Amino acid sequence: MTGREPAAVEVRGLHVTLDRVPILTGVDLTVAAGEWVTVIGPNGAGKSTLLRAVGGLLPAGAAVTLFGTPIRALKPRQRARVVATVAQSPAVPAGMSVLDYVLLGRTPYIAPLGRESAADLAAVHDVLARLDLGAFHGRELATLSGGERQRVFLARALAQGATLLLLDEPTSALDIGHQQEVLELVDQLRREHGLTVLATMHDLSIAGEYADRLVLLDAGRVVAAGPPAEVLTEELLARHYRANVRVVPGEHGPLVVPVRRG
Image 1: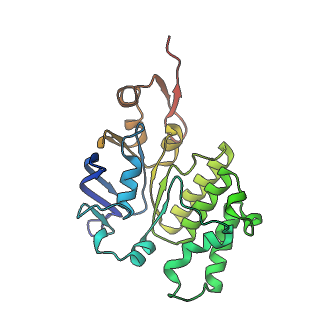
Image 2: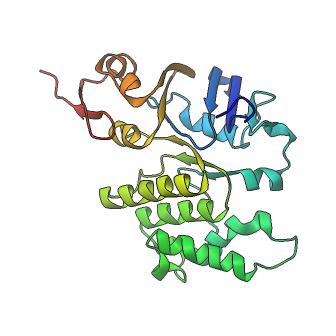
Image 3: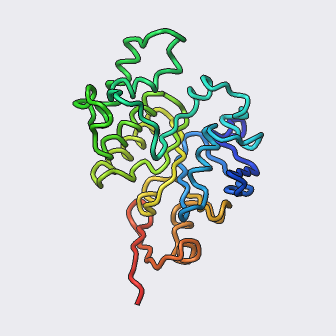
């Protein structure tokens, strides 16, 4: 990132309170354009809340800026062309087919009361093929397994063509093979098209394998940030996760192995 190029995500002093409970208490975060940053932390740390605020799904005041523009200055249609979110459990319209659901990702490019173009359909079929979902396009979402639905949710976000991709636990319902396929695809698209990725993950080894930087969140604050080798240490994980682990150097990042006590 040059001195003239704005950060993809700039978060300064973000506070979020839900139902009178403080969730985030002064979070600072910067993600460079084209970077992959993954937020980790124990349950209840505020990871999903942070992603929702960055995606404009929670009020963030003046604390969040995307590519140099305050998020509150972006209209919903503008924001949808900039940022796409894959939530942990998105709302699924009853009776909707996979093709129609993924086509919703093209909404920012379709005129009001208009119909999808051949280019929109081509973009959707390309994403479905890349995610091994080509045979599912006519199936109802409700008939798919949890892992299949998770890939459909990602397909909708990728079809949206946004520059910033927010992934909230994108592999939580996937088997190990599809975990690797999905993350490799996201990384390939990031490199080919300059996508910026901000994710949350529970699997620390996978987080360290794919992210350029990790941000460790605990009790609504950033307690560590940096390359995976600096954040995935036995000391930090013991302190903030209360976990007994061994950290082993891997080819692409540290591998975190739980160890039984006693």
